[in-house]
Image (cartoon, rainbow, N blue to C red):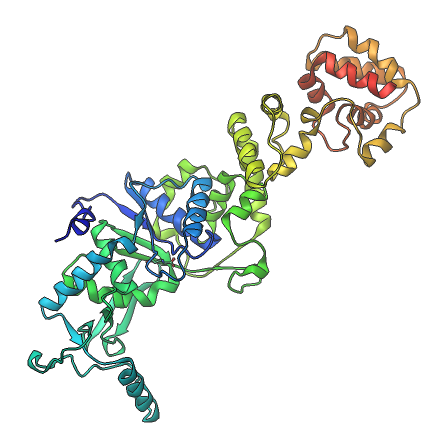
Length: 478
Ligand code: GLU
């Protein structure tokens, strides 16, 4: 056995759960892929198991290193950490070929010398005669003495009668008549292994115990099963999950909006909210909508995966994201915002802004569904004097009698800077002027933030401190 082959044998016999995510690196990490990765990650992490990552890069034409990088980045954003090295399927080609040869040696596979032209002609004739176009190779039972000295493919000897049953944890038992299966090619005549063989060998060698993947792979499972049986390998637990649909019930596509996980990062959805949302997309735990990662790991099981396609619902995503923002700790939110700014290619925070933002977080995180919404509320603490009010705020400034803000200044100079004192000072000032406090709040928001939507006036004052508050009042008076 060549070195590269043995090195890939990382399979250890144990009861440990091993799952994997096996994306083909032909594009970004899309929502469906992210959900598949998340389900595998939750299943393993909730059971002290391993979550492996295999890049299915056997299709050399369509696989790109940029796509692999994008998938890794998307997973990193979502916090879906994998165990061990990233495995390249392509690098395992020698091992895959070795298995094809093993099956050949055992008589479970055979050399097929049929050419492309012969196969095409067979199909054409079958079609003309209204017969099954499944290719039946004349070489299956041929005497090796009759083998020509010519290139050959290795084909598996598919069972010809009876049935194959896929015991799927989501779809139930799926039965396929064996006469529907052809003698699939394992190794092409140029010596390259087919994808279907690579998947089975890799899953076996990686010790994968549970395969959770899109139900577009259900048909493959029947063919993959032939290889497991021929090799005498344990079949993993299979769970084929329904694809994601758009709100209109049609298969999710670009037409429904963003498809890439990272686009959601760049739109400012927090990863925790996205994880929560993706977990609920096709899986449920009673009526629970909002939950933490810890709860998801504890609760996630295959029994909770639904049989019908889940619909992508942006409102629900935003709602969950709002709840995650509201309950996240301040430092984590600040970090989330900093990576959002980088992902969206926006100006990063200065060190001062970053500290100020975290200090203000307590009064920003309620009712913000996305980071941009939170940053809008944070404008007062991120901006510097003189404050340039936007249109709405400028209008609020003209709604109080002239000079009233100057009169407020001495009241604040002497107040002690606590919420109750500030409330007391502002309320009695408003009373004395015969105004409702609400009348003062708009202009004060304009003075302190230059915006109409802000945290409460008191919170802004507390976060800004006395000096900055008075300086902003005095700027406005001038
Ligand atoms: N590479 C396949 C895909 O991206 C997944 C194959 C599998 O999970 O078995 O759809």
